[in-house]
Length: 447
Image (tube, rainbow, N blue to C red; front, side, top):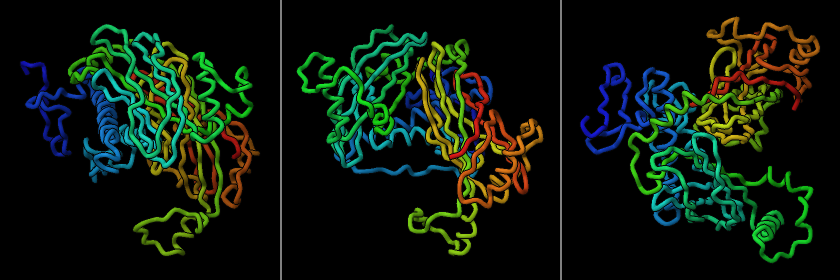
């Protein structure tokens, strides 16, 4: 169109599946997929649509969070899933596979969530939906497309209970206009009554040259690393230009990001540890309440008895100079991608150079078939051809009759797990917007 906005031509097939355009030229809204360049393939369309969905849903929830306890105390998203193969308005698709929008909502709904309001130069806010007050250390870093980082902020802030508050104004960012950059925000927070919170405030005061009462500022407390792991942690990651911080609308600024990702493919380092455990069913006194559950107690007990739980702990590291943007993991069990229900702790995230993340993936299966049996979609090539040690085979064969975890030998890579009825092949792939696909090696062990 003359003003540079795009008018999409929808095929009858897309219209049949309720395709909603990602822009509105009549209202001056730029196409949110074409921000990253005109997609040339279906794969590029899906990748860029995931980016658009993540940004939009996160902004939706963070916008509501800004007015929490003043205009409202909660909100509901009307539709979270399409009943069939739709292309918009969903947090997980018709096959129950989670989308980027789901993890955007989960991110913005953290009990303690730090975020950016891109208006008036940018305000840093935090929403605390818990009944406790916190002392937190807020770190804000900006990174350009070349991987050059600049720490903008590293301060201790106090967070009121059940509140949404402005913490700081974003410091001045010295970058050329219309240049895309990444903004990373992180916060480690402790209950304000804890010794860790007091220690954090005193150390930051000492670093700033202020008077302090602490005797052992020179060294780390023995329990500090352990305390940090158990602390409330909030992360956020934005891709922006300076115009967005002045209230500018999104037009075509991210085309440079689309070109950058083709020239800056990142090879990450990732590995996973897998745990398998057999259970004898849930404790009915502590089991979560299931609404609209029409099963009888006997049917429920028969279904829960002998379940096998699988857990993967995945460590992902970015040792490259560019940032790695919009990564996700894809679990394959018996050749089927993300067989439901698979619970990802997070599955749409980004890493600055030198950053690491530790994530957890959980799923379950029947003891009789170790994961629900072999799928009809699985091919023989999807299983590892290397034979397993006899000790591992015997441990797995007796797993269904055990109420405790068994020790497994170390096996890296996709593993063909034998069972009483059919084998289970587990594979994990890491992909992303500018990330080279990577088969994540898995080491299986005991709980």
